Image (cartoon, rainbow, N blue to C red):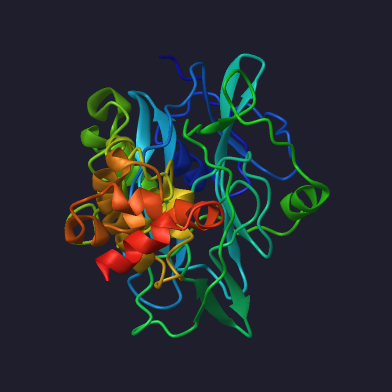
Length: 361
């Protein structure tokens, strides 16, 4: 892998260096595809797919989720864990950085804080960052309210919450870049282009230190973790140890789905016990939606029970037989039962069946 860094410095030289995680030899300005967004680093190979991971619990009110992403340094791609961050000012939202393919190279466009969420390549980072805008929360009279459908928020501690289900096109490839072969084909909307021209704030010092720590951690290099980092997300920036650290589980959702092939709708219900830990990719969209519907997992559990009874009834015959499981053992002469539905037609020409009934009485 080879990296050629070309930087713009809207956040200052220190911020650009921290975002890159590498040494800059000769910075050259590059016109970004969206005005006002910096190209922080450039690589000649595409970034790996996004790993699947759960969101750690929010540490306290006021934090906003910033999704994890692949960055590039002298040793190649490395994972910057997703983390909860305190915004630099009230009313600001985070626009994630993204990779874009341009002319055979891949450029990373740095993220920023602003009054509106701008373009981030149509990449579905999960947890409310569904490719367009942000569905994870909103500012309400100076207080940030959290959408518990997509966030791991303890409502007994954080009270400014709401529920809004998010419909997401399931992205099983976990694509992590825009454009080029295999990337998303999203283009900036007029609103996203306008958001890019608004006044922006640089990543906070905690965010920059978080990126630097990730770049210095060999375990986060793609060459070491093969796309499944042991530190996929953290509760706070730079805290790579402790209970708030969540590992990637890239291969977990797929085997889980294979174990229940006969109950496709059971996949979201299987993840429903994790409303406190939403998953960002793959089965994530389906897993996040049931979070507010706490009553749905119960029907899902009850469905397999009737199904377990059907296999015993189905081999005996069509649907009418399972409706009479108790009648069959009580009347050994089964020939009498098939004759009963035919009696109305037989009573007109012959009254013998009626006489037989009298005998039985």
